[in-house]
Image (cartoon, rainbow, N blue to C red; front, side, top):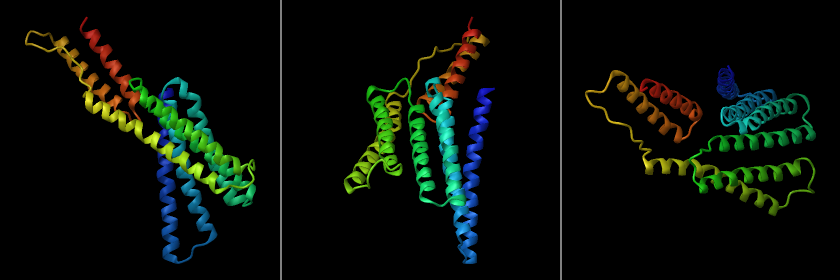
Length: 255
C-alpha cells in the first residue's frame, strides 16, 4: 500500500515536471509569434518553470522515502520544502512583489534544493561502497549544507552585504559539492566494471529435476537483478527486493 502511494506520488511529480515545462514552452512560443511579451506572460512562464523545478525537487524526496528508513524524514522534509518553495514563488510573482517576499522565496528555495541534493546523494549510497566513496558522500552533503547556509545568511539579513571574498567562497564550496556528488556514481560504476559482479551458481546436468532447473533459473535472474541494483538508479531498492524474493522462491523449490 505504502509502495503504491509513493509510486503514485512520484508519477505525479514526473507528470508535473513535464506539464510545467510544456506550458512554459507554449506560452513563450505564443509570446514570440505574437511579438507581445507582457508581464503576465513572464509570470506564467516563471510559474510553470518553477512548478517543474520544484516537482523535480519533490521527486528526489520520494526517492529518499523509498530508501532506508533513516532517510524517511529527509524525504518527507524535501517534499514539504518543495511545496513551500513553489507557494512562496507564486506569492512573490502574483501577490506581493516586494523584497521581503523574494527573500523569503530565495531562502526556502535554497533549503529545498539542499534537501533535494542530500536526498539524492544519500539514497544512492550502497552498503558495498568503499570507504573512499562513503567519505565523498559525506563531504558532498556537508558541502551542500554549508553552501546553502552561507547563501541563506544574506537573504535573511544576517550579514551586512556580500563581499567578493564571500562570493568566491560560495563558488569554491559549490564546486566541491558538485565534484563530490558526481564522483561516487562514477566510482561505483568503475568498481562494478572491474569486479564484473560475478556470482557462482551451481551447474546443471541432465539428471537435474524440474524443480532444481526452475530454482537455477530463478537464481540466475536474482543474480542479474543484484548486479543491476549495485549499479545504482532510481529502482535499486525495488530491484534488491525482487532479487530477494526470487532467491526465497528458489530456496523453497530446492527443499
